[in-house]
Image (cartoon, rainbow, N blue to C red):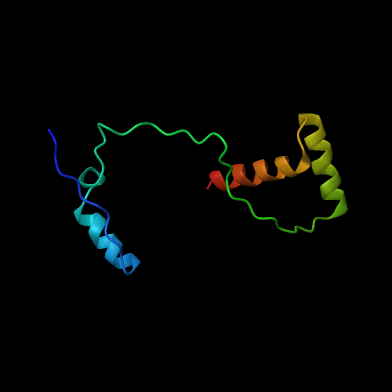
Length: 88
């Protein structure tokens, strides 16, 4: 079945785009039966550097905990923060 596909219009603002997608599905634009799976092996998540001041004693304890786990202390801090936020 060859259904004629449309194109995504150029939107003037986010509201106009929202209204369009409320009334259209991706199948109106893309023939998913012809689509191929894409792989992007070199993508890395966006990051931003921050400065975080910690008491020396706390930082020393974090470094000891990281050393026991054989990971960097920065990675351990990120893991702990992420884990704590996921609990909420």
